Image (cartoon, rainbow, N blue to C red; front, side):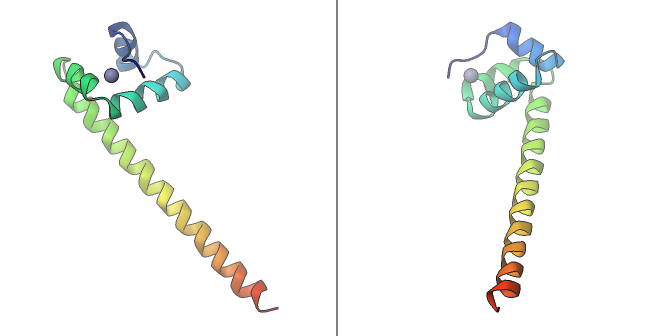
Length: 84
Ligand SMILES: [Zn+2]
């Protein structure tokens, strides 16, 4: 995946991208060391990256909570219906 140009980064920082584009760029920024460095040069770049990481962490926690709920549901249905 190639790096977005400065205009795209500026739009992303300002929240001017479509939700889909926004998610794409976010995924790229998180996995690209080159873009992380470009962010460092922007005012508040580190703060933005920290915010993204925080959001990512929350999303991971949410995802693992969801999977725990579905596992519990499965165990419950096995217990209830497996005994019949
Ligand atoms: Zn990049």
